[in-house]
Length: 90
Image (tube, rainbow, N blue to C red; front, side):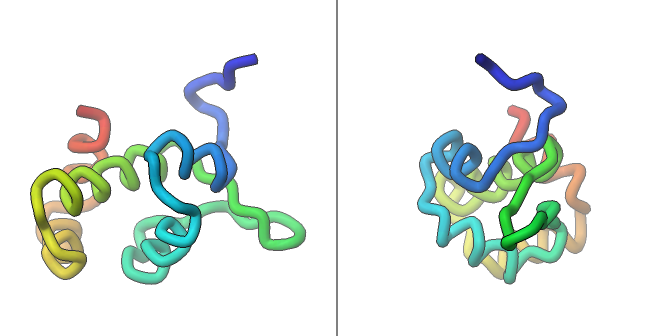
């Protein structure tokens, strides 16, 4: 059964979707304060659709465009997270 586009995603679903290990997503949460998953009992993370798109944009900038973490942080600071979300949406 497929989730609706508005549904929150678990860290394992996001990691699979973005082809990233879960520890990378947790690390990115420490480097990019714009990523704010909802944390439930036991510390389980649930990512809203905008966070997933933001993560997709960050992944594209880091892995495809060759930016450093500092470079992506600068883009987020100067252009805002909507710009990176738009990159994530294609």
